[in-house]
Length: 327
Image (cartoon, rainbow, N blue to C red; front, side):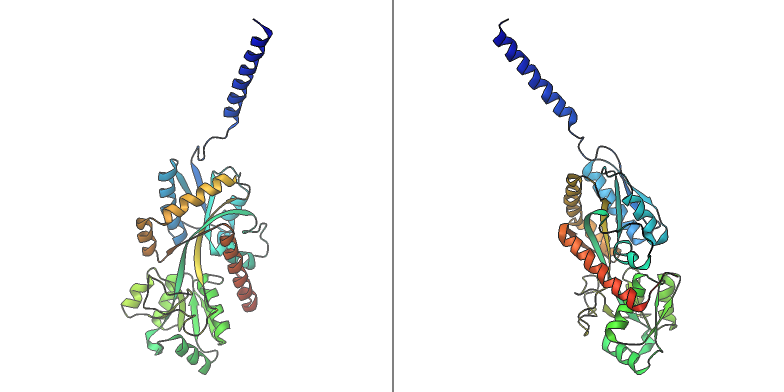
């Protein structure tokens, strides 16, 4: 064999070996195994149900099961920190939202992580406005009438919530500040009790989720005078917004989002963004979210980061001004 032929053969073999080595070095297509989705709240709540709906669809689209694991504790901080500390290999995700991302950093001073900076945020999934409801016997049919009554009787009216630091509490404190009224907060053990408090007349008003509350409104046991989103909701189009009632800076939304450990490969995050956006456009998903009182509100990338930072800043001011604590 001539030296030229030997050289060509060695070159060919080297090329084959390089190709083989390159193939071996390529990472397996994601997801190559089941994906664990941490929900930092108990089973049965809205975040849990949204997670299971989305997980089922992602599993069907991506060919691997998305397994929901509920890790409640410390207002959602326990499960969130588990994801912050998890291996960034695309097999652990977080579905949470406004309480753990935008509120808890200002309620819990000892958090060992920054929920915005220390996670790779995939996308906003959905939002859920609150209804401002009053006791029908209060003879109040609009937000201006509620404000006028509160100003006429300072330190007399009260509003209920599911507890200190909950969305209903913070919405009430924001309303109190913007409307410049002196009303008292009455924390209950859960939203059902908070709603019952309004129905019985123990308190004058409350900001409560749509799911389950609209039935009470339709039955005449509650009167809905406003909704907490900046624009009217398709879930209750006849109800005006607090902003339309003269308080343009008022907005209080619960929201749900997906995140991953910060160092998760960008291509995995990008794939999740595409698939989540696809699922949130499905008519069946829209219908199921509507039953929960939520609306698809897909947002990703820098725009979503800005959304989170703005929401966090809003609640930081409310919590600081009202001296809200979790005790």
